[in-house]
Amino acid sequence: MRIAVFPGSFDPITLGHLDIAKRALPLFDKIIIAVGENANKKYMFPLEQRLSWIERTFKTHNKITCDSYTGLTTEYCRQQNARFILRGLRNPADFEFEKAVAQANRKLYPEIETVFLLTASGLSFISSSIARDVIRHGGDYKQFVPEAVTIHPG
Image 1 (cartoon, rainbow, N blue to C red):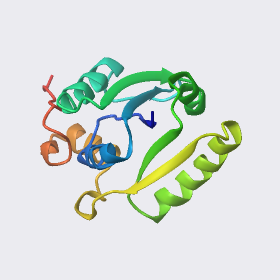
Image 2: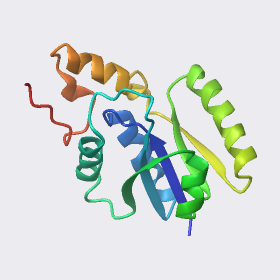
Image 3: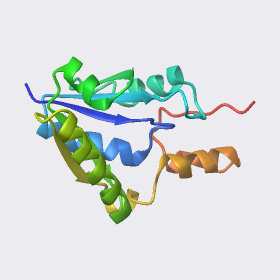
């Protein structure tokens, strides 16, 4: 079984993430969208909220599940019997960063392959950081995130 882990903070999930996951469906038997938790990082949205948005976004896709984890992504992959890490690339800077991470992951878990997909050109400017900034300032965030992401003021 070809299992891929799509790791990230998904704070919040964006249309770019949605694009990558949907386009990866034909490549894998199962995709686990894995929300990594880093105790040293400040998140705008609680883990439960991020997981809920992901579950609702992919509720009609039976090959996609979501989960959370702490620690090394490679260790999580081992626990899930996943031999692939799925990553999206928006620009050359993403590639340079992701290449270094993929090479380190390969050292830690030689059986794993990192698969990169280019984000659709019309979505390549979208990041969770941009979505958070728009949300923080009361802008129209809906054009950057899936329908399931709803923010209630106050």
